[in-house]
Image (cartoon, rainbow, N blue to C red; front, side, top):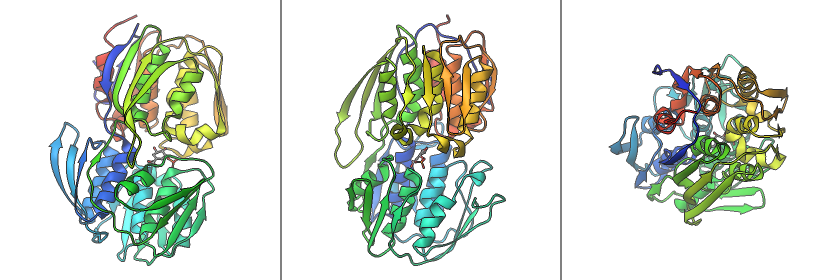
Length: 441
Ligand code: S3P
């Protein structure tokens, strides 16, 4: 029996299952924020009731946004109506806690920078050490007043003074959807044309969500422009399943010969599917069927995966931003594959919920994998049989889940400790794991 805060995993011989994953984390954050700014009631279906997205919802409620929870599961609301406040938020009066969520904090910072009232954003221990200079710099150029109160320079808590914003054109030094989104959301409150230039393509959920709410943005190459002063028009949103959560089961099925997996209703936004391209290069057998076509929302559909023997590959520089959350589990796939898996140009992994390069290297080594750490990535020589081990999550949901998947292939038992963090993105992960590990090798 696993304790509540640990997962015990043993090898399985095959995986034959159909499943759905909870709602997309990135889309849920944006739905809560933009619906709260809209001009009326918005019904959100399949909202992700994870700690990160619940914190964003609570943040909007503390800013005066009324929400009716229509359907709630064991973890929180999955269907709700958010009553938009016509861009007129109310002072929260107390610090707003973003928990573990970089996305929540950075997107809310974009909104709060342009309000006429003061606000404070706080986070947990991990979030309080993550770099906020990347959003503070462009927001200050727009005229925001932000003071960082963290023990580490440039880190949360963040204090905002009420400010009037001016539009800017900002060339982002890092390819980050969170930074792009913070500037675009601040741009909604600035009169005129605010543009962001990204050095590489990043996930485009903010642009798609704004379009759904009839807010015009224009994309020319890697430059995205928003015209300030537009009122988002209330609309209903269906959140697709999160492909970053599905990634764990996709890798497990793809690497286990004779397996068959069907994932239904998962988001297939092309800025999120780089994982599938990399797995296909590794020899995986994956078929995607888009059922809700692209339009002014998010494409979604089903994924069918059949198990095979994978081979290593090199992840390309331009793939990294759209793969950033899947790299821990892809590194596990690399350890299971024949040949070499090379991941470089990924130093952003060091400033995620944990230092994901060190966390992956330490855990893979503890399982007997042959792995080399670089400043900006890692190199795995696949094919060594993995051994069960006791592994920590490093406070990072994706590390915990990636190594639970590794445990499905290891000799002996793998124990993942301190798994509470998994609830930040994937409540119910342990139940699905239990469902699929029904057969022993
Ligand atoms: C996210 C963007 C990504 C990703 C995070 C969610 C978003 O971060 O790692 O989990 O919703 O915008 P960056 O694009 O900032 O690297």
